[in-house]
Amino acid sequence: MSASYLRRGLDRPAVFELFARHLPPNRDWLLAAGLGPSLRLITELRFGPEQLAYLGSIGFEDEFCDYLSGFRFSGNVDAMPEGTLCFAAEPLVRVTAPRIEAQLVETLLLNQINFQTMIATKAARVALAAGGGEPGAAASVIDFSPRRDHGIDAAMKVARSAAVAGVEGTSNVAAAMRYGLEAVGTMAHSYVLSFESEPQAFRAFLEDHPERGVLLVDTYDSLRGVENAAAAARETGVPLAGIRLDSGDLLELSRGARRLLDEAGLAETRIAASGDLEERRICELVAAGAPIDLWGVGTDLGTSRDSPVVNGVYKLVADAGPAGGWRDVAKHSPDKATVGGAKQVHRRIDGGRMAGDTIVAAEEEAPGEALLVPAVRKGEIVRREQLASVRARATDQLRALPDALRLPEPGAHPEPYPVELSPMLARRAGLSSAPG
Image (cartoon, rainbow, N blue to C red):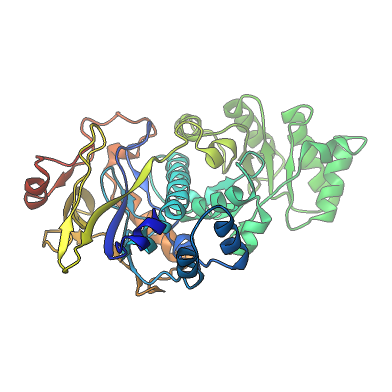
């Protein structure tokens, strides 16, 4: 496509937008993520001698390869900042650039934004469940996912995306180092099985890691393991920071563990739980009063097993004509129609809660906060954020979410969150409301 654009003289300014046509199954909202890594990738995109030689070998002409040899993204990007709640049909990213540049970053943006938004959304749901529906409990959730993630790069992005939702702890030490997260780990059953007895294993671990004394107690018998952990702490003189339950009836076992720890004078020892946890199960345990302080979430966090795809798309919505001026363009395909023209999203807040979004033409004035902000100008990143500020935004956004939308079960509220087209945009599109 890009080679043909070059040959046909079509490398004029164009506008593309990235959005989800529909919310994924089991989701009432999305938490935007992945913008930071995406901006770095598109602004650093280059074609070296090896890539150019390969393209030439599969039939691309010298003129196009020469163009690529000097490729630099020179356009503008407007986007919803990471940690922003978003909904179907709303543009998360808007790219304005020469057509070839905007086209060549399509797959890269979709790859990064779709996956990381999916994970951040899942992590936010888990964190809300851990907090009983209230934001701010994400620090009690630990990313235990790398063993089940779909590759090493996915594991790194899962840790970062979970951090966007506020999860600060991860068992992925490489991700902790790269992103400034807390490296969190305990021990595996193999450690306990490597010693002649569980008490011997516990004493050795506490002596070798006196500042990280969290013991896995379910290798043999969970409650007996709690007793052995308390005894090991007493015998070694090392404080027992926590115990971890990884199997069985977590409600009853956590209650029994709390009783045994309190009786041993270990009221400050925390209880961690893991083992195929996800937001619905966590919500049930929290509602039942399970005395669990930390939640290690693995497979479901790293794969978003119940809803594993954000089906974001990247569509041309406007381009410049040969004589200048902009032309709105739109698809009319059944079930895949788009709305032409560059767009913006305005959000209304009422009493500290989100009250509704309006998708408007980019040049249109509307009530509420404009969600898409400048991120790249003339090929240079103009918005760089630390994860701490992104986490703070996500927490604020989740606090502003209507109460009914915090529930782990979709459809538990009477009405979906309102998203509509402005009258001007609706007239242009021949629609009365936002598609999807």
